[in-house]
Image (tube, rainbow, N blue to C red; front, side):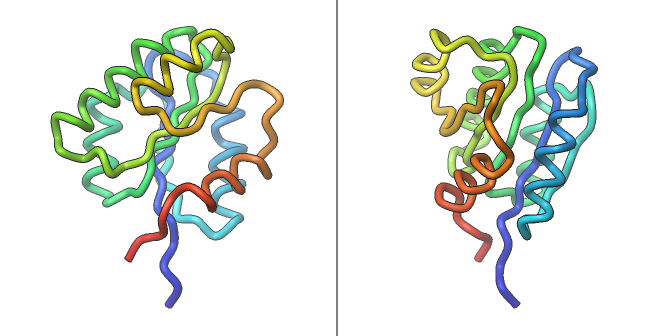
Length: 133
């Protein structure tokens, strides 16, 4: 059986808008990836714990609240603390261009702003994230 990329997709923080993240999760699933969608209002701790428990290769975050700098930074910090930096973090939402260099410095591998297509996201995941062994 061919191995599949396993991704935890999450909505951290208090943002209650989940239409976009569901579209992305469905596109990844339809592209043959195993997707665990954690739902709304997840804490960084819950997201990292789920990714480790699910043996995920990646975490995809959707943030529309403006708290992306804080939430991405906390997820990256927790992954370091848990010795889980092999989990690739990517995300999207309302993220100003001027914040992208700092997010990359924090270790966020991929950032998708409004207008990114599901095909772009799927292609990026396929070329960036290794499938499970």
